[in-house]
Structures are given as structure tokens and as C-alpha cells.
Length: 456
Ligand SMILES: *Cc1c(COP(=O)(O)O)cnc(C)c1O
Image (cartoon, rainbow, N blue to C red; front, top):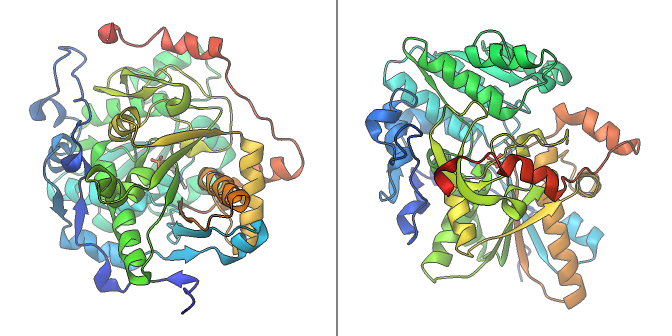
């Protein structure tokens, strides 16, 4: 039998020319976003002040199965896509597992993550509409970097509200964004009313994603020709990220394989939603039945311990409400090192699929995640992002189960990015300084008690 190569590369012509909208194949659609003022499903007119029009339409579209990817977006995709599907032969050997482990590697661009796939789309539609600038938030910095690249490419100004603790810990991330021309502001800041209010209550506040979102939204709605863009959670973002899954499907078709188990890390759910899109479609339509596993940090366990409820997407409670697995928009996760996974909620699409039993979820403690990251780095010579390492750990656990049972399952995981800006975290792990903080039920109850009353 012919040996499967280490890297399965598609040709440039095989980059998907359409995104796939998983919602079209869901029997139970994700619950509609609500206008917090009326508690009615939000209308196109109501969200176009926040999102640009094409993206607002994508956000509300539960039915169009395939969406053409505009040629200007394809042009930029061609710079760094298709991304490789890689067979982790060395990792398999080190684990002594009969399982076949594959990973889809999205770290081959300057943002160091999959985020660029949606940043390009969002900047393109903003430019098309004649907007002059965008605002956004960034936690760990990958999304801010990706959007800086995209805005530089399409000629848009960009204000990035960067969670203050990251702003201070990751000066080089900030410098990369500035290189692409972005204006980077530590959040909370005094450039918005929300920021001023938060700083008045606590001048030492180090910020959170929810708070940075509030600031970015406020800045967008109070500036001319400006819109807010978000790098995860939203259904439009999962749509754009479907390129990951579609390429993976094409690569598996080329080698005649199909995954039995798919593992992805889950922050707001965009890489996981993108990676699984065609495989979840096969599951929903009864064509195949892969196990799909979301790996989240034990310190921010929205799927495994959250409530499925309407909640705000931000701390300032100015965004529409989304029905999702949430820890409550006032939940502040402990200072774990996977910044991209520190969000209180989860994509409404994935939340619905999880609630309907189409997906499993696991919560992992960070020292065990870094242990897997270091092992993976040594075997496959890629330094993974801490976020991505959650997927590695999940895949390793499944591969070890295969070792016990002797089953040669095919495991796929999403390697969402690289960890070069996370060396403080690696050092903390290597020096034995890393803690595994897991919130108590009482901790969670505090934020649950502040969920909006629409749920009762
Ligand atoms: C942002 C990020 C994540 C988590 O975001 P999702 O929307 O859940 O995909 C995971 N990995 C990396 C490298 C990221 O930058």
C-alpha cells in the first residue's frame, strides 16, 4: 500500500471558491439574536449601524447553503492558502498508538492563526460599502494582527482595542499591528464612555475581551463611516472559516480517508465551526457519523459548565443578545495563558449543535495542555499556540484510548496557530510555575445570577 505523505497539499485551484453555510443543513437553526431593547429578533435595519450590510445579511442568513467568495478575497487567500493537512507520523510513533493522526495547520501566515480567513472577508465587505475605518477588540492579539493585515491590504483605517493585560504582556504583538498601520489602544481606555466608566470604578482594571468589545462597538457607532468587526462567535465568521473544513475534506478525498474523530479548540467557536462544517453536514444528513469534540480550558468552561441562555456578547451590554452556552457576560476567567479561549460565550451555531447532541465537549487544565504542546513541538517541530494545544491534548487523549483498545481510528485536529508570542506562558510551564485554576460552582453562580431576565 502506498504510504500517505506527511503533507497533503491541495493545488491553488482547489482553494474553495464558495463558503459553506452549515446553518442551511441544520434542522434546529440557531436561535435568533435579540434586540435588547425590544426582546424581538433583531432585524437587518437594526444591526446595519453596527455591522456592514453584506456581513449583516450573512449573519441573518440561515438558508443560503453556498456563498460565492469574491475574487478580491480569493486573491488574498491565494497568498497563504491552501493550508496543509499534515499526518503527525512522529507524534503517532511517540504515543505508540495505532491511530492515524492528522492536523490542519492554519499557522502559516503572519497573524499566526486561522483568524485571517475571516479578517480578509470582513475588511473586503467594509471597503466595498465605502467605509473608511473599522474597530475591533483583540485579546491574545491574533485577531487584531489578522485584521491589521487585511485593513492594510484593502486600505482601511483600524482601531484595535487590546485587552490591557495582553497589551502589557505582548509588546511585540502590538508592534506587528502597528507595522500594518493599526492604531492599538489598551482597553479599558478613556477613549470611550464605557471605558471611562470602568476605569472610574477601578483604575487598575486589566481588561477583558467583553470590555474591549464594548469599547470597540461604542467607537464604531459614534464614528462616521466606521463599523465594528468581531473575529469569532458570529455566524458570519463561522461561514468564512468553512474554508478550513472544505480544504480538509478535499485533502481527505485525495488520500481516500475520512476522520472518525475531529477535535478542535473552542474559544468563540470559529475555527472549530469552520473545521467541522462539511463533516457536521455529513452527520446532519446521515452520510457519516464522526465524533466531534470541542476542547476548552477548564478555567473558562462555557460548553461543559455554562448555561444555554440568552446573553450579551460584551460586558457593557450594548451588543445584541445571543442564545449560546455562556458563563455570563460578567464572568472573568482567571489569568490562564490561552488568551484566545477566554471568552464567556460560544458560537450560537455550535451551541445549538451541542445542545442537540451532535457534539461533545471536554475541559482541559492548562499544565496538561502545555505538556501536550511541548511533546507535539518536539515531534512535529511546530511551536503551537496555547489555544491550539487544547486540540492537541484532546487528540492525544483519543489516540491513547486507541492504544488501549487497539483500534486504528483516524483522528483529525485543528492546529489553529503558532505560539511565538506566548513564550511567557511556555516559560511559566517549563519553570513549573503554572497553576491550574478551575472556577468553583459558587464562582460560576455569581455571573449566572446576572444573566439577562429574558431567560426566565
Ligand atoms: C482566536 C484563536 C482561537 C480561538 O478562537 P475560535 O473562534 O474559538 O477559533 C484558537 N486558536 C488560535 C490560534 C486563535 O488565535
